[in-house]
Amino acid sequence: MENPSNLLIQRREKAATLAAEGVALYGNSFHTPQHIAEILPLGEGLAPEEHEAKGTVFRVAGRVISLRKFGKAAFFHLRDASGEMQIYAKQDLVGESAYSLFKKWDVGDIVGVSGKLFKTKTGELSLEAASLELVTKSLRPLPEKFHGLTDVEIRYRQRYLDMIVNPEVANTFKKRVQIIKCIREFMAERGFLEVETPMMQAVPGGATARPFQTHHNALDMELYLRIAPELYLKRLLVGGFERVFEINRNFRNEGIDTRHNPEFTMMEFYQAYATYQDMMELTESLVSGLAEQVCGSTTITYQGQSVNLAPPWRRLTMDEALVQVGGLDPALMQDGPGLLALARAKGIKLQAEAGPGKAKAELFDLLVEEKLVDPTFVTAYPLEISPLARRNEENPEITDRFELFITGREIANAFSELNDPVDQEARFQQQIDKRGDDEEIHPVLDRDYIRALEYGMPPAGGAGIGIDRLVMLLTDSPSIRDVILFPLLKPELPE
Image 1: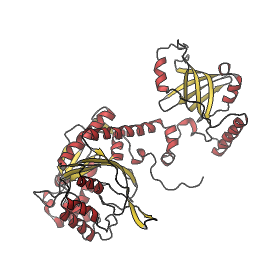
Image 2 (image 1 turned 45 degrees about the vertical axis):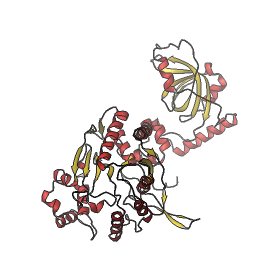
Image 3 (image 1 turned 60 degrees about the horizontal axis):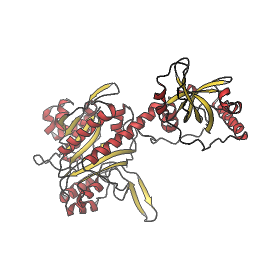
Image 4 (image 1 turned 135 degrees about the vertical axis):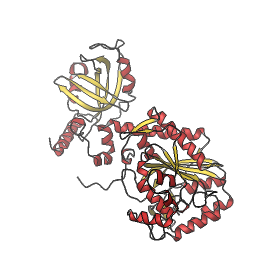
């Protein structure tokens, strides 16, 4: 294998030679090319060695992805955003001068071609070039044999190269765009208004997570990148908007793994005069509908597992899940000291102030979550871990809340919203008092949010759906980094 440094030198020497001959290495004169995908169907009926009868001249532009030269003739494959096709270049057709310049082209160059459709002896539909134009010279060689990019760190760090070499990567992100478009249409059809709320907040809230902190010089104040838009969206319910949603970027100063990236996308939505059960039905309808639109079926395959997204979905309380799926003794569900002891025996670290509700949640994460493959709504979350959710009217120790799990991971979190300002302030304060050294709990109470509730917020249901994890599910992607165009990575070492 040739030294990469030598290949870089050769590319630059070719570029210098072309420039000296008057070739624009980065020109902008090849305008309005046609898409390859629109051209290919026009030649489907051609026989081998037959030209398209009308002799129509087509213009295409794209990247050279393979190149075979045979003296005074050559074949190369050209790829644009819609597809790829073979180009036949012959000195007799394009002219000796143009062909001489063409011989200095490389795989990776972006070029423009004009010509007519025909089929080769082997039956491959091709464009017979009448003119060739270098549009952008590539100074770096693509990985050897054009399918040699397998190092995942290089793929994530150099996403542009990943998309050139692995076209299926681009397809994943096209599906992501389609998914978000369908979500927006779904919400608009149901009367939800899409809004934008602050990304920089004086008091981070709406979730339990360690925030990123920054400083605003002009105001001389500390600010935090938002961990969730929830409290601002609910302020809009107070203001009179009855159905709102936001597809938003959130930032949480946490670890990185296949399910977590410090910068991620969520959709949160809130509906006045609704409950968590309404949110359950809406979420079920949204996700199953997306599967049909994007995947063509509500039965999909994720990492070799068949997943049935057709409604209705299974519903379990947290206690039922711990017993039926986690294998715990039903009597233990009412034994607070026993739950705390079991959690610690299983290596779960709990603060001294933690109660049985926290122990239940941690045991659920350990014993149940990864076993929930088909969609499952888990309800009746302990009050202790649900500071923004409405108490259940029959059992004040639990809340009207659900989390949705699919393929062993949380996809959505929702509840009937707490709109009692006195109860909300007390819960915030209790959370702060028990904070200890937990950096995921902010030590400052959001008093403006309490003030907003004091003006009166209608009863409401609200939910948050992890867009990245949803895209992972619907594109069969094993890692969150596969569905984020530019995931966060450590700084690159100098070449």
